[in-house]
Image 1: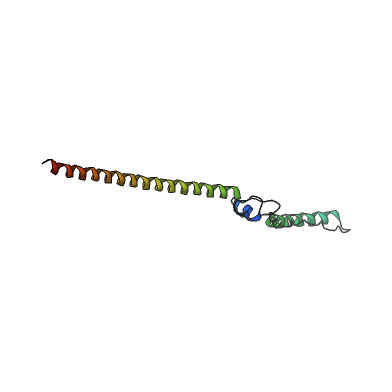
Image 2 (image 1 turned 30 degrees about the horizontal axis):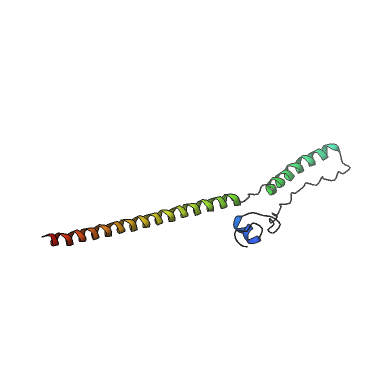
Length: 130
């Protein structure tokens, strides 16, 4: 049980998944500012309209400023895991190629030794014939 086990916390960390053993952390939500309605006074209607018109644009601007917040761009864990798997596959392919090259070199050396032995045997037989 360990890094490859999907049911353990360590395994989930390595794989990049979530579940009962590894919960997602909750993001801190930015509280939205709600404009409170202004209390109405017993004043003439013309005066109320002027106050309301002036107050409303200010409230909208403050809401826009607090609501607009840049969210950090984070790659999805699945993409990261997929990239890591691709890198591992590439490394394995390279290792296999290196092994194949070593085997080929060894075969070539073995063939060269056999040829040398054959030449030595021929040289030994030739002087005997003379």
